[in-house]
Length: 253
Length: 222
Image (cartoon, rainbow over all chains, first blue to last red; front, side, top):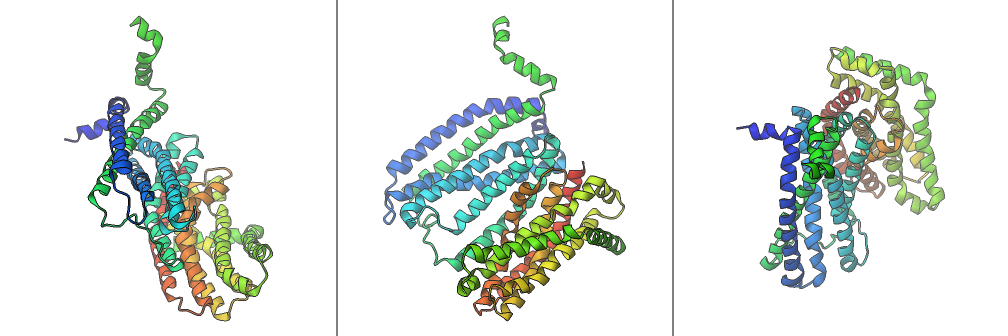
């Protein structure tokens, strides 16, 4: 029953599996994101207060969602790696960090662009923008700590402890920022999480979120493949797998 | 077990007092940062009263960060950290002893010094008391959170900037609640709420911190 799980721990198996899945996932993601973009930019009606300005949520909200869920993936993979000594879980965590940081950055930039017409300024110390900024710093810290070690095993285990400490702390940081924000600002009107969103505004958002998730998994699969190659560069299966690809081999074989 | 804890605390305190410059430099840093702000912003008493609580807390955060460099570094270099990890006593306990000693030599002097420095920001007597109390509750949390970062970077050369990047986001809640409590006191309101939240953070940090730091120490020693 658990063989599929144990197979995931085998580098050549994971390398092949990820290679087979990545193009499919990527194409499905691109199609979904295209549908979501069309739905969001063309089919959805303009908001009665924000006009067309609200449409940036179709990028902003999925990015913000991904920035947090990728951190959760990272922390979970780190915990799996530490507990079951599964090296490939560390590879997943390492491959996720830059993707998560990019989504966080995208969420910040789109938040600022949305804020310009809504609040009249590019940056507001709004609770969610601020905690997103802190999340970006946490990602940078994780990547910086990894970069400080030349030995991969050491980088894996050290950064794993940091990721787990971070996952305990991030909710506390988030709520302290929310608490701080409510005291300092006369509640900023944020309509992004208005629950009474109409159906033809909502479905493109959901499609976008699924598309972004698949996009992340596709990118993750590709990045994990190169992580695995780097980590196993001395293994025999790597030279075999790569020699299949080299052009002279293609001609002779 | 209590004896092992005491032995670690006593040892670290003795080492610290034999290296007085290391002990004093974070405090001098604290004092100098606080002196910079009136020069950079304005010496007007009204301005100083407004920025005072925040400046004092940011300075305390940075001073704690500076002091963290000495927490595990020399023990890591001379191998005594390894001996601690090999001992029969639980590592979280021993690490807690080290953090306790570190707080006694870096946190407590901040608490003692802060009312004096806060006077230069024209803060009222009541505010000084609340500030000292908030620092007394908040600095243990800062030491505990910082110890995780210090343990993770124990084997890294020139870890100063990295340590700041790792630790400062984690310290943010302490800064928010601590500065808020002090501001409330300065404006004549009841600071109990943020103080309770600071205490809650301290309880959480004391409960979980030593285990996280011990795990980080083990990883660093591998």
